[in-house]
Image (cartoon, rainbow, N blue to C red; front, side, top):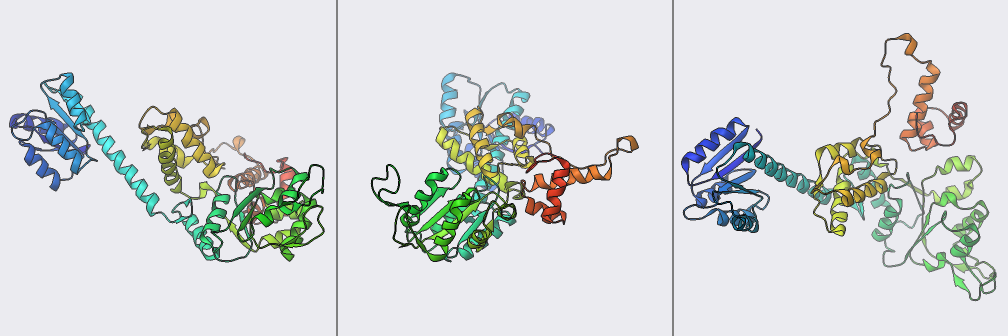
Length: 458
């Protein structure tokens, strides 16, 4: 069945004829000959579209349209009239009609209008369901998602929110590490105090020490006055050390000492100053690998890794992709002043199939771009970036019986190792764990493959 239609027209013969004709086209039609009866039927019947004549005895089509819009705004109304003037069309649209058709009725034209109206009705239902799912999905601050992976993350974050312990949040770029850090701060006892963040990879090495620890007057050229560093500015609150994996080796011992002693000495200063902050560190890098490679201090790694929270990549979160997409549609459509309500089914399929190497950040950028480009009320496949439209999953398959086309076992192993590494976003520790080998063995294999640091393609 294509859809359920309520037809209201005071010509009984027309109702019977349309019921028969539309029935052959796959529609189920119920009909009434009075507007009042049609309104009563609407209260007791589940229909997806209302078709009403404009001129009827008693309640006319415009009044019926207005009443339907009031009590069931989700059900589109198609108005039919023998008087196809501009005035009648404007009147019907002002009354809230979805479409306007003139008599004599052409069945093909009516069928197209019905299909569009029913599709519109079902889309509204899908959008409402997604929005309800967004509201019902478990939240932790601004983190959104109802997947099993995210529920486990929420549970862990909830248990540690009140703890003063240092937290290390890891995850691929774009998974929401800073969002999680802010949520921890806002859920904890320090929420009324400052939340201060610094990106260790964005500040030049020569300035990073001064930013963190502050400096005394005259400590260096242009230091005309003393300045408190971020560790002091965040006193009583939380300091986020974002991308701590990129912190210069020369600065790591001083940070370690400060975290252990809970005191600091500003650059060029003589006095030790106490500070009281909760430290949250984030990184998208594999710190254990950096430690083994001598690029991150092992003692600092253990000092910041008191509680470890790993945010799952978007590709591991299942239906959260559509929840987040709908959330971003609502946000960016409002900002752009455009009436975009959701996704077409093919576009939704593309979003689910894509691997999202850039995770939630990439999804948000994708939706913002689509909102800017689309000229419809739903985002279609044509509005998505080429990388999303053309994406095809890679698989290791034996798809031939021809011995000449089969590859050696070493080649199958190479492809599988690189595919696993791709699936975990280049994290060698995770890849080694999945493959059941040591990291040293994995490094050796990658060297044999000439795959570089973190290959992305198999």
